[in-house]
Amino acid sequence: MNAKRTEPEIALLLRMIDDAYQKAAWHGPNLRSSIRGVTHREAAWRPKAGRHNIWEIVVHAAYWKYAVRRRLMGEKVKSFPLKGRNWFERPDKLSGGAWREDRRLLEDCHRRLRAAVQELNRKDLGRKSTGSRVTNAVMIAGIAAHDVYHAGQIQLLKRLMQ
Image (cartoon, rainbow, N blue to C red):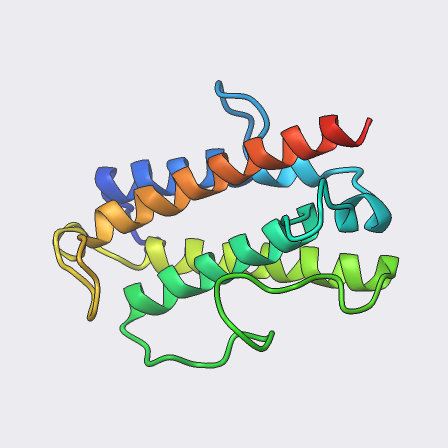
């Protein structure tokens, strides 16, 4: 059985999304490490009424990983496990279990996005997904930047809590 050889461009994009989400990277904390050790009460804390909390940022990041994967795969809009899109008011239920469930959602969305990227080939990278204004390569690089951006926001929120 031959393992699929990953093309260099795909390997680079996989590294970018992994560095931004879960691997040690030169830029500092990635998204997953930024939420490590955050309790459900800390995740629900808001710096001010009407501002997003860590919990909402986590679900927002999960949603966009889902949306990018869906676009890459050419899938029609399906239901994200939560009602709504983009930003989701959290928590509806303040509990450690609910926080763990939403962190698992983020993990699952990342794993599924990564699998979709790994299935692409060089030619797919230059294409635009239906309804997209950018190429698949730009969209994948963008989701990595999205994770790093929100990891920084979470780091700032954690400092503001102190």
